[in-house]
Image 1 (cartoon, rainbow, N blue to C red):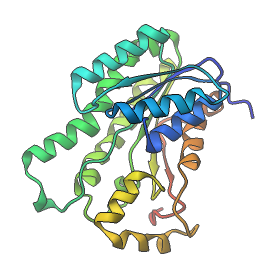
Image 2 (image 1 turned 90 degrees about the horizontal axis):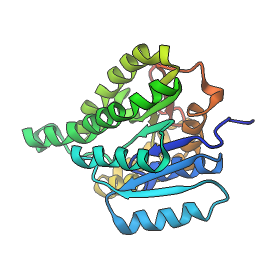
Image 3 (image 1 turned 180 degrees about the vertical axis):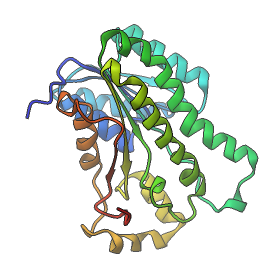
Length: 253
């Protein structure tokens, strides 16, 4: 299937490792020119070199702390200066720390909101003028299955990520006339460094595999394939949707 992505440009946030890296990898394989970012320069450089070795398109990389608005603004400016446009935006961040409600104070909640919601709104605001001008765009938000079925001891993520659903649906309604689609993807338990960290702090998570109908944790490339489809020309009539890539873990209808 030709996804119609050759020569498109994408900014994939938090993409030096984990799900973001998997998304960037899949997009490059489809001929997309990709900008990646991350906080750790060593991880970022290593990922850039790996992606450049693929038979695909151009890769640029920027060291960025997505929790800081100034760095988010600089990131988009730098990508636009290099590529001239951003056709596809994938908003993504690492997760806030695990814990229960009484583990956190007001500043922890502010930090989580700035990381998860603040990063998404800043990046989207900066790419919209170009997408509107060209009458084409794809905005894909990476949230979590926790927005549909809360995960124990992840209260910051459960609560704040849920606000992304309201943002996504509202933007889909506002931007449809400009041929800009806005969708949300909800990764389930996927074998990333993040999952390994959570298991280390809470070994009981290993038992979750018994609750997954497919009987295993997901692979990053499986998640990335779904995101890449939503970014493509083939997904031109899908907007305002939330897609769970979770092996059937969410129990609700």
